[in-house]
Image (cartoon, rainbow, N blue to C red; front, side, top):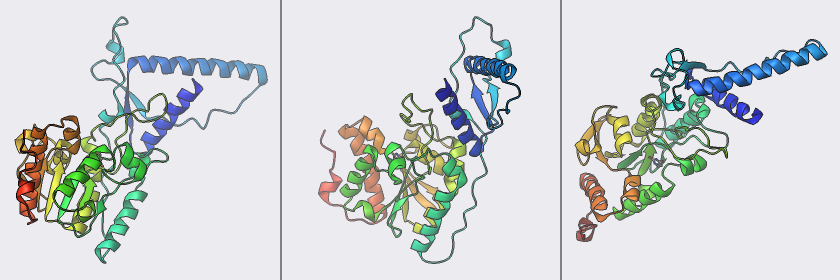
Amino acid sequence: MRAALQALTDELKRLKASGVRDVVVSDESLRALRTVVESRARTAAAEKEASGPVASVAEAPEPAKPVAEPAAPARSTPPSAKPRAAVPAREIVEFPPSPIVTLPSGDKQTRWDALLRMVTQDEVCRAHVRPGKKVVLGVGNLDAKVFFCGEAPGADEEEQGEPFVGPAGQLLTKMIQAMGVARQDVYIGNIMNWRPELPLSASGVQVGNRPPTPEEMAYCLPYLKAQLEIVNPDVIVALGSTAAQGLLGVGSFKTLGEIRSQWKLFAGKPVMVTYHPSYILRNPTNRSKRAIWEDFLKVMERVTLPISEKQRAYFLDK
Ligand code: URA
């Protein structure tokens, strides 16, 4: 129980440091916490009686303010009703204001190095990254014509501090090579600079990923814009629905199908919206591969990359 309370305290401290002021706690969790606090208070009172005055528990952190779930407030929940599960932290709406990024003058490398320092020292980014994990900025050729933009780092990316190095990244690298260029010739970034958090499993690791919230994306957007300003690519490729929402606006479309394979505009740059490579990993059919490849062909045409007949025919065979 002590370890669980310590883990909870650490998580609340981390959330508080990142600007979170409210968390949603289920009735069930509130009851469990109350039991623990009451039993600790009873133990402390008994010890005090036995051994005289003791120091107060001053180091206990001021926790983020618990808020009853809107749909099942504690007051109106009938005693027999089954309490809802705690809503994960992603429903928190408050977030610190986005950073104002001012790049220094100098060549591209100097400006990018300065940006890397800003991002890795950003207190909000750091507060969202668990110990031993990394804040992630884009990588690649600062003169790239094509800027790939994904969603957010995953487990491999926060470990290595580089975007798209896990399974989806390895597929993206192959697709870039199919365009006739190397991964080092393009620039690869993300909407987000940290891995959106989920509660840790019993073994203390984050299992799985969640899409970033609009507030998280808004916070990181100035860093993406700064990378675009430095690289100044000819085109941006938005990989998947979340990246497209981050660039084009949350709620600006309902389904990826509405805008996929079309040219849009972000920060004055043409954006090709396509599938995320992880979609192809989940649906490894020639049909889905051909769909994303057709978007890549449009990008190649736009940046005047040579296209062979063989490349034009990739994934056409059923
Ligand atoms: N998926 C993304 O969107 N970005 C990464 O960096 C890795 C996986």
